[in-house]
Structure formats: C-alpha cells, structure tokens
Image (cartoon, rainbow, N blue to C red; front, side, top):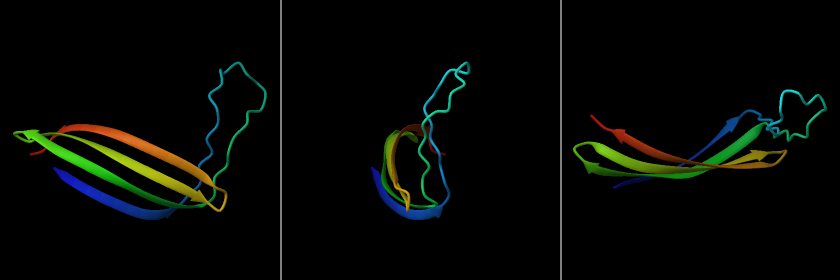
Length: 81
C-alpha cells in the first residue's frame, strides 16, 4: 500500500456553465472563478499481484479571490512495469 499527500498552488481561471441544448439561444448563468488557486489531496495505491494495482485520488481545489470550490475523485486501475 502506498499513500501520498500533496499540496500546491497555481494561476488560472475557470468558468463552468450549465449544459444546455444547442437550440437554446438565451444567455446562461455561469460562475467565474478567481485567478489564484490552492489545492490539496491524497492518493492511495494498492498492488494486487504481479504489478497490477488499484488506487484512488481525491483532490480539493480552492479558487480565489472570487471563491469557487471543486472536488475531484479518480479511481485508478493499472499495471506497473
């Protein structure tokens, strides 16, 4: 079992908007995030047998000065040489 923690920061902007059919012509509501971000997370991997492994990763991202929070979870399957 391998467990790791990570933290970091960055610069960028995201603008999520709701999914709408292409036939809709009215403006949609959206959120514009700030230019700075900080993120932290955890990853865990478990080797099953002969290099095959499974794992998961959780990343929390905080955008500022215009606040926006995002959480991502990934499930991983793989083979390590």
